[in-house]
Structure formats: C-alpha cells, structure tokens
Image (cartoon, rainbow, N blue to C red):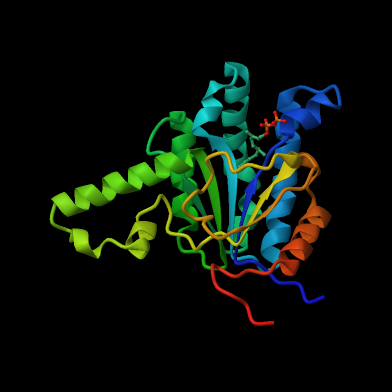
Length: 236
Ligand code: FPP
C-alpha cells in the first residue's frame, strides 16, 4: 500500500490522567509521560513528511482543573519550551502558538514569545501548539479583528471571504487533513473548528502516553484508506 501523507495533522492528546490512574500514579506523572511521548512523536511525524502538526496542549476550559494540576502543567510547558524542543528548532521547524492574547502565567508568555521569535524564519515545517485555546473563542476573536479592520478602513466588508477569515485566525494554517484524538473519546471538544471542516477523524483507544510512532503509522494507514470527496464525487 502506498501510504498517503497528510499535509496537516492535529492531535487531541487525551488520556494522560487515565493512563496514570490505571497504573496507580498521579495525574502529573501522566502529563509527564505524555510530554515524553510528544517529544518523540513530533520528530517521527515531521520525519514522515507531514508539514504542519497541531497539538491541543491546554484548553481555556482546562483552567477549571485543580490549582495543583494547572500549576504542574504550566511548569511542564515552561520546561518543555525552554529545552526539549531544541531538536525541532535545529530541524528548521517553525514553532507557533494558537492562543488567547493573555491569561497564561507571565513567565510562560515570555518563553512563548521567545520560541516564536527564535524559530520564525524556519521553513521545513510548522509545529502549532494550542494553549489557552478554544475553537469558538478563536472564531469570535477573528471576527472582532476583522470588524476592527473594517472600522479603521483597512478592509472593505465586501472583500471578506473564507481566505481572508483564515488569514486572520490565531495562525494562518492550511486545513487539517487528519485529526487524531487518543483515548477513545469520539468528540472534537471545541478544537480547531474552522480548520477541521473537511478533516478525516481517527479515534484510537490508546491513551496519549502510549501513542507512539507505531500507533501514528497505523493512523496513516487508516488515513490512506479513506475516500476524501470534499462534497464532490470521486470517479473510481
Ligand atoms: C489531556 O489528558 C491532556 C492535557 C490536558 C494536557 C496535554 C499535555 C501534555 C501531553 C504535556 C506536554 C505538552 C506540551 C505541548 C509540551 P487528560 O488529563 O484530560 O486525561 P484524562 O481525560 O484521562 O483525565
């Protein structure tokens, strides 16, 4: 079988907590295991030829979790962005963040800016990290941005179309071809709603810490077998 490589893959990294609980570990240990999986997986995915990878690291709703868990995750992100993604930087991958303008700890916001700045001229691929992110918020924030441009005279309301809308989202990215949500839950939970209009969905039952390179390759096989029609009819 000739494996098709999706241009843009998005992953909802679900199940860190359940992975940990089933092993008698703390939820934090689950997130740590998830972060190690992610580090290996990103390299594998870009090596496969995927050009854009989006991951759901933290939703706006995740702030409802215990202070202990939120603090742990924020510190884990700081550590990961500071050190662990160095190999991606060296591989010429541009790292961008899809997020609300403010709301994260100052220290984290600072590192995010730094990582974006350091990798902004990289051209081999894009790693989009969604953090303090909600899909509906992204659409509302984009609408506000466009209204401001219309009010200031920078944009004619009659020129607003899908392309202009897309270019004004948190990040200007191509459509998602393959969405993966680990852990067996079959829902999109307010993830990149605009970008996944025509994406193929894949819901493996493994928890994210166990979603390794082999599991990703299985996802590629399933993707290859899908018949994508984008509302049209494919001639056989
Ligand atoms: C969902 O599992 C996972 C998260 C809310 C956090 C994802 C974070 C990581 C994988 C850490 C590293 C990420 C980056 C970008 C450095 P859950 O806690 O909802 O699991 P559960 O549904 O089993 O409770």
